[in-house]
Each structure stands twice: as structure tokens, then as C-alpha cells.
Amino acid sequence: MGGDREAVIGRRKKGSERAVKAPEPAASPDVLPVLHVVHPEPVPPAGDPGALDEAEARRVDFVWSGVMVGSLALVFALLSVFGGVAVPVLLALTGAYAFNPLVTLLEKRGLDRTLGTSVLFFAGTLLMVGAGLYLVPVFRDEAAKLPGFFQRASTQVVPQVESLLGVSLPDLVSQRTAELGEKASELLQSAGPTAARLVASFAGNTARFAATLLGLSVVPVLAFFFLQDYPRLMGRIHDLLPRRSVGLLTQRFREVDEVLSAFVQGQLTVGAILSVIYAVGLSLARIDLAIAIGLIAGFGNMVPYLGTGIGVVLAVLGVLLSWQGPWQLAVVVTTFVVGQLLEGFVITPRVVGEKVGLAPVAVIIAVLAFGELFGFVGILLAVPASAILKVVLSVVIQRYRRTDLYKGGARAP
Image 1 (cartoon, rainbow, N blue to C red):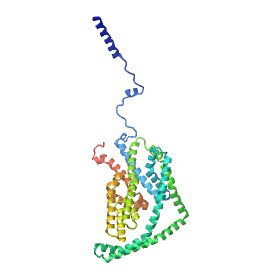
Image 2: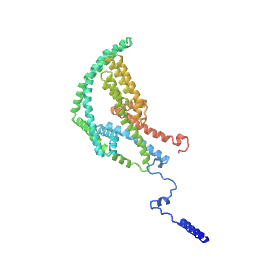
Image 3: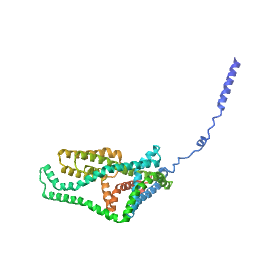
Image 4: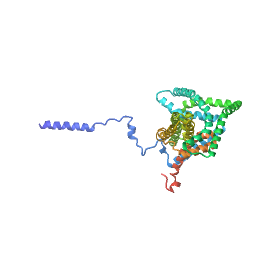
């Protein structure tokens, strides 16, 4: 019995020794370098904005801000000096920028980019042709009504207002209204022959006429190639950025892209939706020029208060000239109230959001200033240029608030 117990104890000791001396499993070659390489502190990647200290980031942001302001100045200078060349290129770039998200979406669905661009251009061409076939006769008929519209306004608006209010307006108001209506009617009646003479004189200058036609015809071609090569163009610009500050610069350009996309895509979408709402509502009110007034009020909403104000005035004139009862005025008021409520609380927050973030007063001042400096092109580019300048100004203010000058001698973080 004792011998058996000792034998059992001996076997247990040998088993425990084997368990202790058993070699550990060898680590795979892929794991060994990770196990033996130790970094004293994490190293930020080259594209990380945090890779720059405050002084470097401030210098990069200030240089970027100067380049952006200089680029805007260069664009307006080229438009002023070389408008015949710069305008088609700018229109093509704008079209490529606006439709790039759609082509990118088709590309993500497995469609080749060239084929996706072709499909988008084909669909856009069909849409434009269909819209032209429908809208051109409508606008022609409504434009023919304009002289009579203002002619009737000169004689019927004041009596209608007096009958509605139950009071007589001063004779001066009646005289001025009649004069304005007559002048507007005469201008519109002479607009057709004047436009024909302008076209004839412009066409007489063969070189200018040929350059304009060539510029307009080349816009779709340039837009197609810009849209097809858009990722490659952006990639080349990205490769030219300084490697150490590429992360911060990419972030700044992303902020500008958010603002511009919110304007180019969002505002046009909002304008189209509002135009449909206003045109349908005014058509239900059975007033003349309902579609034209709806388009003016809808797309004019890009300039706060101005487009809506003009639309309201024209709609009220339409009601007074085609008065069929108080229900017309109620429909017009309801149309604009509903449109403004939907625009303020539903459409703009969902489509545009707060990415542009320009105050209405700032938009009006920008339109007036750019229009005075650069004419009609300045009016078209006033809001997007102001949005870019807003991003630049916010970056400069952000860096300024981190300086010793702003903090009163405190060390910047």
C-alpha cells in the first residue's frame, strides 16, 4: 500500500513538472513585431490637423484665407476682362460641381463614371427639351398679356382700391398710377422691336456673334469633361497641397464645399419648390401671369424679402385686375403665407440647413455691393462669394482669438 501511494505521488510530481516546463506556443511572425516595438508616445498621421502646433496652424490658415480672397478677386477680374472665355468655363465648372453628387451616386451603384455622366446629360437634355416645349408657349402667351396688364392697371387699380376701402384716394395717386401704367405698357410694347434691333446689331458684329455662339455651345462640352474628370481634378489639387498641412487644408476646403453645396444645390431646390407652390396657388386664384409671378417669387427668394415682396405686389395687382370676389385675395394670401411657413420651418431646414448661415441683411448688402461693382454677373455670384468670405472670416477670427494679442498676453494653447 505504501509503495503504491509513493508511486502515485511520483507520477503526480512528474506530471506537474511537465506542466511547468511545457514550452509556450510560438508567436506568429506577424505578432512578434507588434509585441517588441514600443512607441513612447502616439505619432499623429501626416493628414491629421492635430499634427500642426498652434503657430503652424495659424500660419497655414492665414495663408489659406489670403489665397481664397485672392482667388475670388481673380475670378471677378477674369470675368470683367475676359468675359467671353471666363463665363463659359465658369458655367461649366459650376455645372460639374452641382451635378457631381448625382454622378458619384451612380458610380457607387456600380455604373461607370463616363456612362453615368452620359446618362445624366441625356436625362437633363430630355428634361430641358420637355420643359422648353411646355414653358416657351406659356411664357409667350403671358408675355403678350403684359402690355394689357399694365394698361388695365393704370385705370382699374385705383377704382378697385377705392371701392374695397370705401374711401376716395387723392387725385395725385390716381395720376401717378396712370402715368406709371402707361409708361410700363409703352416700354413693354416697344421691347420686342428694340430687342430685335439689338439682336440684329449684335449679329452684325460677326466676330462677337460667333464668339458668343461658340461660348454658349462649348459650355455643355466643357461641363461633360469637367464632370467626367472631377475626381481626378480634385485629386491633383489635393496632391499639390503641402503634405504636413494637408489635413488642415482639406478640412478648410470641406467647410467651403459644405457652404457652396448648400447654396448651389439647396437654394436652387428651395426656389424650384417655392415656384411650384406659388404658381399652383396663384393659378387656383385665377389671376393672370400666375406662372411668371410664381417663378419670380420662388427663385427670387434667394435674395431675402426682395423676391417675395415683388411676387406679393404682382399678385395683388393680378387680383385687382381680375377681381372675382374676396376669395381670390384669400387664396393669394394663403398661398404666400403657406409658402413662407413651409420655407422657413420645413423646406430650408431640411434642404439647406444652417450651412450658409448668412443673415438676410448681409445677403441684401452683398447683392447691392457686388451688383454695383460687377453688374449682373456680380449679382449672380454675390451670395456664393459672400458665403466663401464668411468661412474665411470665421477661420481668421478663430485663429485671432487664440493669439496672445486677443488673450492679453496669455499663452496660446
